[in-house]
Amino acid sequence: MLAILLFLSCITACLAGPSNIVRPCKFSNTPCLREIFRLNSGCNPNVRGSIPTQYTIPTFVFHTPYFNSTYIDRNLIIGNHNKCQISEFFYNTKTDVLVIAIDCPFLAFESTRILLQHRSLAEDTSFEYYYKGTYPLIRLTMNIRNAINMDVCSAYTFADVTALPIFQINPNDPKTANFLSRDLTLLNIFERETFYGRARQLMLKYINSYICDFGCK
Figure: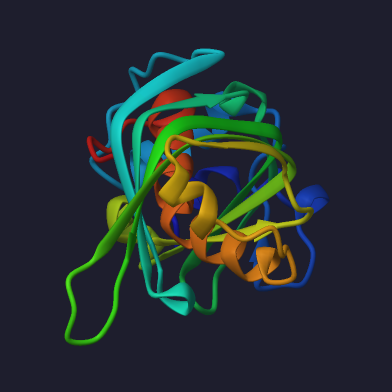
């Protein structure tokens, strides 16, 4: 059982649901969350305590297998990450799994994007365009197994794209303009695959900035 739960057992009854599900902290109680992570890992509790309104990642690569494509975001600007809030936090005593989730309203992404289209027995074809998109709500959920010795850096984060983005695309050349589709029928598949690649970075940035620093990106 999580070390901190032994300490908090006398106060968790009001926050617990089923007998195997324990919610030791209110979502807004960051010091409590930080202590749980610190006691059950080697993370550094001396965190910045904030995320800038906007920050830039020089290069971010993600893959969309359904579309046989790789995307490279150059000078990716991420906005409103600082507006994310914890929406779930519990420990399952039977499975030794800690679950943490955050809701991120109006996440914004802006970049010069390179699209590599892959084909069998052929060289990749590349396209380039400017992209700006804002997502009404992205929900990120991380499952941390072996929670008594947690390793956040290797934990999986699931992203729920609850609504499609409002976006702007400007092709950088005629070839790209002719290639890009105006058919948005498969946009929901594209966005799920996009955030399969983005989810880990977003969740780790939040945990390492607000709760406890695990030293990974």
